[in-house]
Amino acid sequence: MPPKVPVKPTDTHSDAQAGLVVARFRRDFLVDDASGQRHRCLAGRRDVRPVVGDHVTFIPGGEDATGRITGVARRDNCLARIDSRGGAEPLAANLTQLLVIVASQPPPDALVIDRYLCAARLLDMRASIIHNKIDLDGACAPALTALLDEYRSIGYRVFAASAASGEGLAEISAALADEITSFVGQSGVGKSSLVNALIPGAQQSVGRISDKSGEGRHTTTTALAHRLGDSGMVIDFPGVRGYSPPLPEPASVQSGYLEIAALSGACRFADCLHDDEPDCAVKAAVADARISQRRYQSYVHLLRLARRLDSAQARSARRH
Image (cartoon, rainbow, N blue to C red; front, side):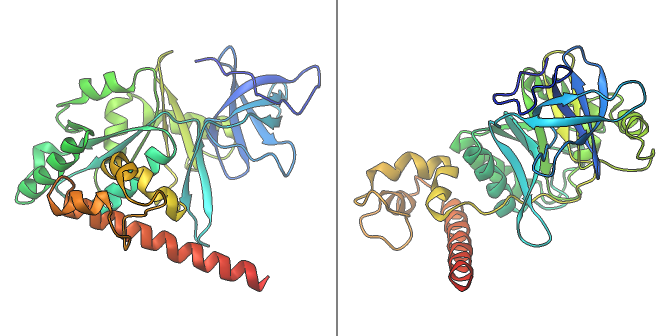
């Protein structure tokens, strides 16, 4: 997977090359050139803010020296999370696939799963669900099975796997080919174990990259790309303990729910948000069980959160 040339390189220096950002630390980055050679780099200017997965132009620093990232290509998408101040913190760029991991323990939070799936659709990424720890399913399994059946009925693919036993890993590995993938999930669902089981040597590569960056073996990255030969890449977030997507604009929320988006054109009003509006095709589908009540309530919950944020931002803008 050689890096593509940025759309608008911002440096015409004769030594500038095209590269792919494969790791990000506090201040520096690792960039692979077209031949796969790895370079330690800093951002060349304050307005150059790369993330893992970005295609960039950079000037190599030479043997044991630090290079300089001079430009970032236009992104196909950017996966972000909510930071401590409520803003959007970019994590990774140009993803094609999001795999949401769930398990019977800890019990799944369906609202969190819906929010992951909504974010993936709004970013034009494929999304599937991995039922991990199937070897440990117990009393919570029936409820989880019902939830996963609901997602299957909508059209989502659901994998069953165990990082411990290896069951289902071959099928997931096949789904990683030719994709740029990230795994997300609640704390404790086994994301790290699954990544390590699917990518032999993933833990060791973190140490090697830490050494290469000069940050120290025990320093974790914000994000790290694991290449899968020439046929794909997994971007992991070993230094990020939680992932919660930023809230979308209210009018966009419905696009993140497959079954709601499919019916939105049948509503009486073109701008119907399927909440308080009359003659709503989505609410009619909920009433006759073509759309699950749980998913509809999940949609309304996220829509109202987005509306509150939108109103708060508008008030703040008026004050300033």
